[in-house]
Length: 225
Image 1 (cartoon, one colour):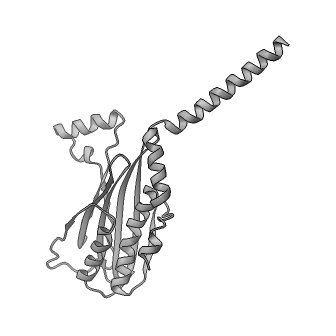
Image 2 (cartoon, rainbow, N blue to C red; image 1 turned 90 degrees about the vertical axis):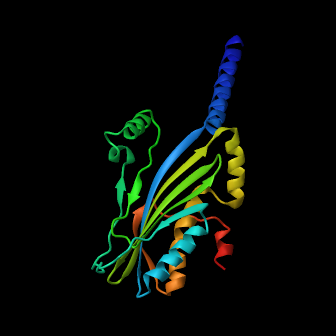
Image 3 (cartoon, rainbow, N blue to C red; image 1 turned 45 degrees about the vertical axis):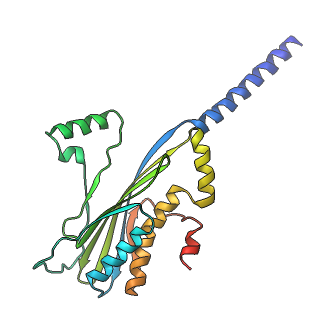
């Protein structure tokens, strides 16, 4: 009888600990950083003005702020093939400076130091931000490269998300209603391609990228009508 009681108590203790582990897994605070890159191609004779405006309009739909840059193309010949962005590590680029040393120390302490996109030869570049306080932050670089058959859109994004904790329960409830941060990141990227497609009347084709562009928020169905 006593042995049976001991077994029952032991089983109950295991179940309680398992339950605590499940709760702790849910409430544990997490911070995640994911890099994205995507390349789209549109074969068209549309002017750079038209493609740039369409891209900027699509980008502005889902971002809080956009900084644009259109360098002069004086004497530049349209190349046979489109250019491609390069990634720059700010800490490495500032090596030997006090700021670079500080950034290196932050990286060594586990802090994420996002890379930035360098768009040499692009006819237009932008840096946009979409931020939801206490939830997620998206920094998106876009480069438009012109070539003989049309244009290529290069996109590089740094997506940062907080999850878990008591506030995470509220975030999950909101996400179930209006869409997850990941879904809004996908929509932000796709809306630029859609805007260019609508403005030029030409098919925008996906060339390559990581990670796979997945689902979009349900509200996307309403905005596309």
